[in-house]
Image (cartoon, rainbow, N blue to C red; front, side):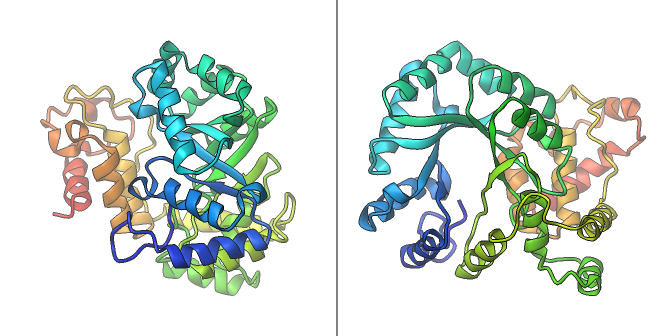
Length: 360
């Protein structure tokens, strides 16, 4: 998902450097490669397939990819996309096949199209050895999906800043209690926990004496959880690969100290002090009569300030908040402000958020 590219074109994977990185990773024990239909503007799967075939590595790794469920309009579409992926990946089977980015609405839609039958079929005919799903929705919508099929594994966001976001810690623990293996994604929050570290956090880490990089602190926090089966880390440079491999050698459940846990709690506190809008995501403001996605917008705007990653925050807003739900659709009726238990100035904050996140 975050392979090195040539220039600013995400579709132009730097094949030479990426090949060097993956070869090093596999040589040093990495055995799970995760890709998906849309990654690198649909060029990730073809590259991975080519690399594995040319280097005779297919049998040495577990290959994971995902059904692009947003394109699926029929039971036949499920087979169509999987068969195309097998062709692109130059293989006759996927070791770990996921239904990509499930949420309440997409799950209900897929149930009506026969997704359970499809998953049963591909396990029986051998096109997929194990089936699971990745999740991007509110926590309460996670549990019905876990219970809705005989899944073998699930992929959820796990990092020290998002214990109550999406599936969260409760979802992680629930899945594990049901016997599912858990693949942890976004352990570094898309790199936000390692880039542009605020001076106050950098100073605290330097003075702590634990001698950890921000990436190591974040990764060890995830690997410390016994419910986590493996961790996905989007590595863009060889330095990332070397560091990740080094950390993984000793990062096991129960391997971080109480002192380190306390430091992480302090880091979380310092990050949260940078929050611009005290929205608790209670959603009392919804539904907005003009369909403005108020909590989602405030979350992106807070990320803009907390992590200082303007590019990613803007990309998140522009890509994942539909135009009809953006902040500029607010008609200033102030119905949301009457309902807000935090007494937020929602209308004015929406204006600030839209201006910042659109880069205008």
